Length: 396
Image 1 (cartoon, one colour):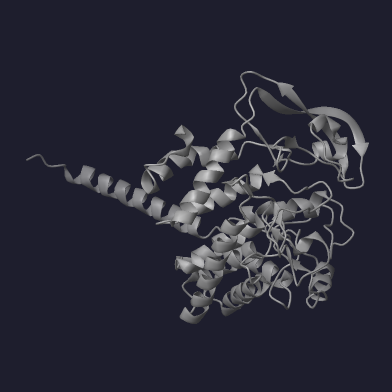
Image 2: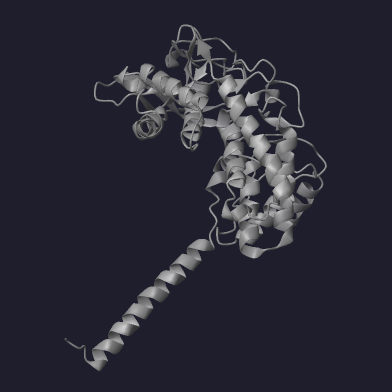
């Protein structure tokens, strides 16, 4: 047996201790950072898109909290939470607000203009739950519970959710997949149902209500999947809250088969353990649709263009579609119901069949093409092998 001399042993022990201590410190520091990435959409809207309905607007060089200041960020979230438990959209939760801004926000607490749009409300609830787990400060738990109550109250009897609640006039009453609203809610509820470590504070009575809400949400998803000629395809960005059929939202968002929004639905359904026959059929049908709706030899490119002022923002680029035989498959965001033609539109609601026909403001300011279905297609073989190895739709 060989022995290490005492001086070398001491050095080795110190090195091991230093390594372990360094790793422990790194892990500790990692736990003390809660990502604010989920608030990016709202933050970008606040800083970069004009909106006269904003409660407060950013000041020049608005200072921000670091992600390590999670309690202060959570305090901001509580500040913006309204009395009904929901949140308004498009504000920076990391902003270090001025006393005047704070006072203005407080005065809007009773306004009932609250939403799930642009990753709002469900992200705030999830953040508060994480901060409560770290701090055990009751105000964060109370805010999260109030938000969960709001989500369940907003749910339609058929299992879907509107974009805004309380209900308002117009398309915001529709059941909305756009901008991750529906699936964001469902993924939050799934955490609670599965007893995620950040939601252990939920008591059995509330967890039971959440489980019922979650199951109704899945049922509504399956009922909304668009069926044509007896075959299931995918989903629309928004569905009528009564008929569950595809419907218009904004003037350039027509009823159609919407590939980008449908991907998150499919990925969610794929993640369900022991899926029943309806879920298996739903996934396979949507994957088949993604496969059949691929567009080849096409690339979309953005390029610099003369500066142009629009009602919404300053535009310095334009977008065009080019032929490229080396390009990977791509999909349009919309496919026309019935004909399955790639579909576009504009602020006058005209149905168009090429991106070039769309006005520059909408052409450059909206994601008309997507590669998101590739995510579902890549995950499908492993899912199919696990849950329905005898029926591979990609080989049919």
